[in-house]
Image 1 (cartoon, helix red, strand yellow):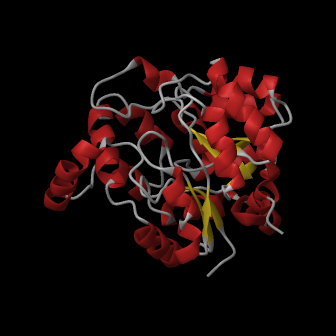
Image 2: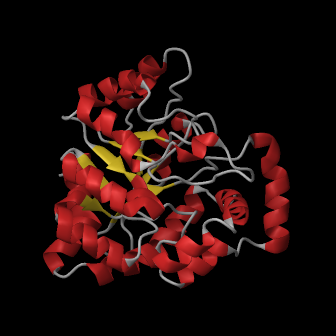
Length: 298
């Protein structure tokens, strides 16, 4: 097993409402979950294919995401890590769909898992609850502006950032416009990278990890990271050419490896990262040393 830290995984269903999960499980067992995402993986996240398919196949892609998330569990995650040679993985809950307390206990049975915490910013006493979770062992915080229906420029996030800053832990947020539901919703644009700029500017000492490097809005994500040194880009769903561009424009110290398992396999983003890095030093930074620095792992 290599020394690799996957900064973006899920070991719970972090999107589907509990009442829909049994039906989605039955559908997945009957038809599987191979669709546009699966094909995109096989093509190494080819950016040309993604751009052409994003519109016509958005609803089908959303449904495939829903089906993939029903497979999330600690056992399956650890098995996938072993197959890919990943030694440690950050596990991300998303409130209100999944519970942070369940993630906090996972390392007892699975020592390679690193728990983060999530609190819905719309709920009462959100900052106090996040403080308790971080005191209980969470190593970072997860934001999801789209699924939590709160744009990143909204000041409702500020109390949570202040708690993270006090505990000196990173915040990893979904980044990139994406249709998570079968029908188009206004909040699908809440992930646009430029919308993070007020938050990055207001809290320059807080480390923010922008997931997926902005997805299809990767150029905007790179530009945002250029302007804000406290922004780190996580590279899941990015083709090697896009990762190479980010290395050239930002430096390998500003990138971390992530897969977003089970929304993607682990092997594909790992292969793209290895192909993108032009030196062993750059690859080590992306695959583990940057993550160790950000997480405070000695």
